Length: 366
Ligand code: KG4
Ligand code: ZN
Image 1 (cartoon, protein in one colour):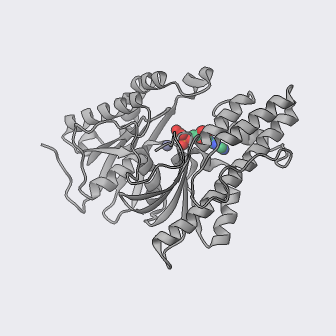
Image 2 (cartoon, protein in one colour):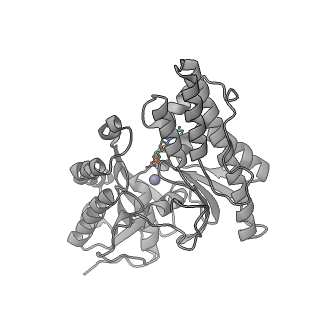
Image 3 (cartoon, helix red, strand yellow):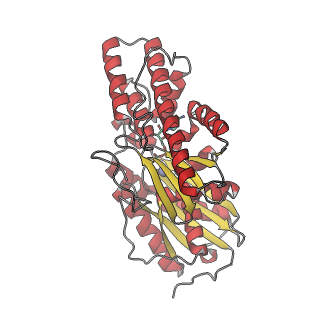
C-alpha cells in the first residue's frame, strides 16, 4: 500500500540528485499555502575525481554516486530531524542526464519509497531548476527562465507547474561547457567558468573582437561553437601565451559570450510578451551554475531595467545542481496528486517542452 498524502496537507519530501557530477540529497517541506522551507541540503561534488581527465567521465560519475549516495541521504535525513517514516514522498532525478548516475539515484529513491510505503516522484532536472524560485522566494508562474549550466542553455517560458514552452536552446555547446573548454584550452583549472571569470578580471575585453553568435536573429537560440573556435584560433596565433594574453582572451571571450546571451534573452522577452499578451508580469529568472558569473549578472541587470522586468536569481547553492530543487519539484507534483510508478524509467533525454521543434541544424540538445 502506498501512503499518498491527502491534498492540502503539508508535505515533507526527500530529493535525490545524481544526473551529472554532483551527488545530492535534501529534505524540503511544502506548506499547504505553497510556501517552502529547506530542512537539510547536502551536496558532494565530484570535481576531484574528474579533474585529471579535464571533464566529467560518465563511468566514474556513476561509481562515485554509488559510493556516497546512501551516506548523503542519511546525512540529509539526520539534518532535517525527520525519519523516513515521517516523509510524505521520495523524489529522484529521472533525467535528463548521464544514464549511469540517473539509474543510481532512481534505484535508490525507488527502494526507499518501496521500503517505507511512500509515493515516488520521478523528477525532470530542468523542471527542478525552473521551479526553484517557488521554493526560494515564492515566485509563481508565469516567468521567463534562462537556464545556463554545464549541460544546458535554454530559455523557457514557465506558464505553470508542468506547463513549459521552450523559446530557445543551444544548437551546439552549452554556455558553461564553452567556459570549461576555454579554460582547458588556456591551461586554467576546472570547473572552467570561475577560472575564466577570475582570469578575465585583469584582462581587456576589447582586445579581441570575437563573434557574438546568432545575435540579432529572430529566434531565441544560442550557439557557442564558433566563438570557441575563434578563441582557439587566436590563442594558437599568439603562442607562446603570456599571462596578459590569457587574461585578455578570457575577458574578450566572456564579453562576447555574455553579450550574445543577453541579446538572445532580449529576443526571448519579446517572444514571451507575444505569448502572454499585454499586462502579463515581466519577470526573468536565471538558474544554473553560470548564473554566478558577475558579467552575466551585470548585463542582465541592465537588460531587465531597460525592459521593465524584475530579475530573480536563487542563491548560488540553489542555482547549481542540488537535492533541494529535486525535493521541491517532487513536492509540487505530490501537492497536485501526481505520483510515479516504480517502473518509471531513467530518461537520459527528457525535453521539458515535448512540442518544441528542433532548432537549427543537427545536434540540438533537448
Ligand atoms: O549548474 P551546474 O553547477 O552544473 C551542471 O551543469 O551540471 O553548472 C556548472 C557549470 C560549469 O560549466 C561551470 O564552469 C559553470 O557552470 N560556471 C560558471 C561560473 N561558475 C560556474 N561559468 C561562468 N562563470 C562562473 N562564475
Ligand atoms: Zn543542473
